[in-house]
Image (cartoon, rainbow, N blue to C red; front, side, top):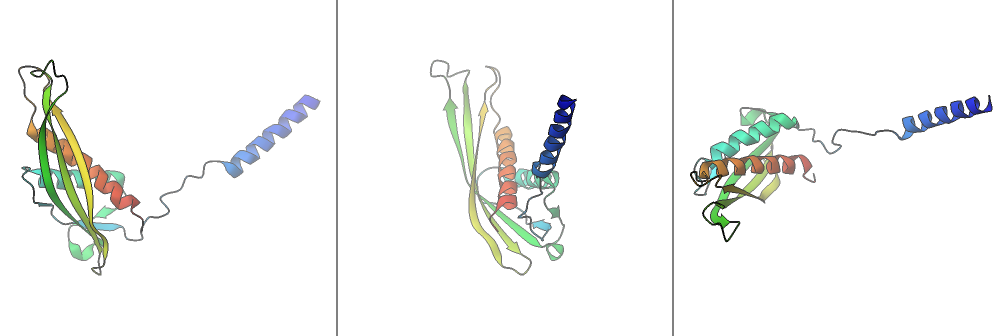
Amino acid sequence: METNKFLLVSGLLTFTISLLLGCRYQNNPHKLSSQTLYIENVRNNSLAPQLSSFLNTNLRKEIIKRGYYDLVQNEDSADLLLFLTVDDYVKNTEAYSPQDTLLATGFSSSINVYLSLKDKKGDTLIDNKLIKETSSALRENVSTSPSSRESIHYLSIGMARKISNTLENYNW
């Protein structure tokens, strides 16, 4: 009888403590009251072909997937305006095995993007923040070669994630 009382009391105590100290999940407490975002066409000042269109598409996908902002089609209905400028596209060769340069060759690519964010009054919230991204493409076998378009596509995906994270986690 004593054991049953002890188990009952300890079970109730554990339940009460878990209710009081349990999971305290919250949405982002720094979430802006501004929920609509307009993305100006990405300006490409680099020599990377199609990078601006890849970045524009992948950034929109990332923002929609994360659900932090609602994208709008015109500036007038937006609370925030996003401006992106791609710059400094660099492509370098890579060889991971000095003894096997034919099979294990590829290249690495990197880009810099300057991000600016303004509110609908025109006040600058973020001014030309530099975001960098790198990507590598390797030869799969002797008969294939790495595709520069594939590398640019992966650069744009990584950059879209970084831009989305920057917007969501910026210290307002």
